[in-house]
Amino acid sequence: MLKHLPLLAALFVAACATAPPPAAPPPAPVPVQLPAQGPVISSPQPVLGFDVLPGWSTSPIAPGVLAFSRSCGKIAARPDNAPLADAALWAGTVLEWREACEAMTVIQDEASARAVMESLFVPVEIVDPADEPRFTGYFEPSIEARFRPEGAFTAPVPGPPSDLVQGPNGPLQRLSNGRTRPYPPRAEIVPEPSKIIGYAHPADVFFLQIQGSGRLNFPDGSAVRAAYHAHNGQPFQSTANWLIRNGKISRGEASMQGIRAWMDRVSAAEARRAMNANPRYVFFDAKPIGDPTLGPVGAQNIPLTPFGSMAVDTELHALGVPFFVQTTAPGLGGEWSGLLVAQDTGGAIKGPVRGDIFFGTGFDAGQRAGTMNAPGRKWALLPRAVAERLKATEPGV
Image 1: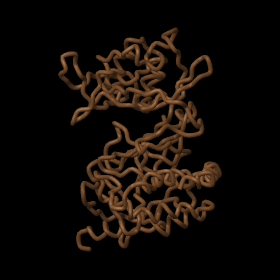
Image 2: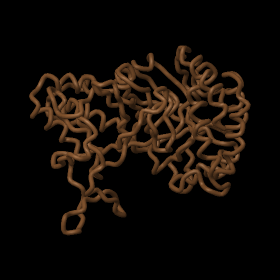
Image 3: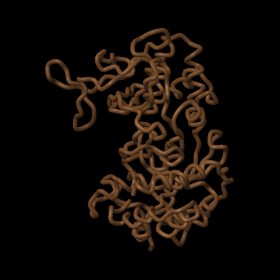
Image 4: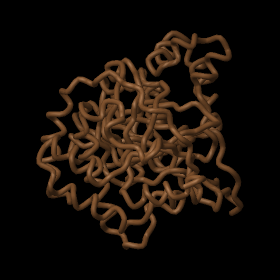
């Protein structure tokens, strides 16, 4: 599968220059309940076709096709009868995805990619009657770092602590007497000096922990990836919401850029109080940069693709499933629709119609991702057999 990636990568580059089309409303959906812990999905009668997806015929899909081809390398290595995910049995088995994965090898250009997708997949809309759909953006920060504290570079980038153990219900702290307890919140954690990867500006480290991975650039020209290792098991709490509730910023300033600007205006102690409003704390592994054109490794253990990868709630969705998403953001040029593959997850990504779009690496990607926080729509693209089985579960069918 991966031998075809150079061709797909060339397709990806060409597609990035395509302007996103304005969205058009599809027909009203009819709810269907997914089996086996699934979220609610919907589709008009009969099963939804690609012709009613807003912007499908003109949206660039090459980044998503490239991402899906990478996911297929993981899918193809598993047994035929294995479910794509135990938590999302509705997504079907490996065998039911093999034909679609093998078809990735015949793609020559965007037109053939679209034709292959249309012939083998059925789009089925995911809905959530209990909550508003929400799409955000994330990126791989590339930040200045130092080998030791100096100047503004005072916050440690923490490596995995020796007292962190995984319990049956999540991370625990092993005490000197051998007992364990829930790992402490952010405000109580002091990184072990021997485990520290480097030092950076406190706000940079805070946002690095929110993004989950990044690159550290040192003055001698060396660089490492700070790759996600684990978190402390504490619930993720929004610092933006804490700042709004306490009158520190307006809702219009509740972007990454707005929060960073506020932190730069206030004292270090006040900024630290705001950071501690989020008790979750992330630890990293130092990894070689490797191919600098590739994104960080996501939850599916493959590099993420800008505008082709998305983080989802893995308690509801299977990694490797392609989705078609319609949403809007200044960093996306306004109204946007595109093909995104579930390849990652995150502490704040909870719910069936929740998605975190990967924007890429570096400052510009961060500026664009920071503008992304909007409602939208989300369709799972499923092999025909899987979609037809779901259709059969609809009441009255």
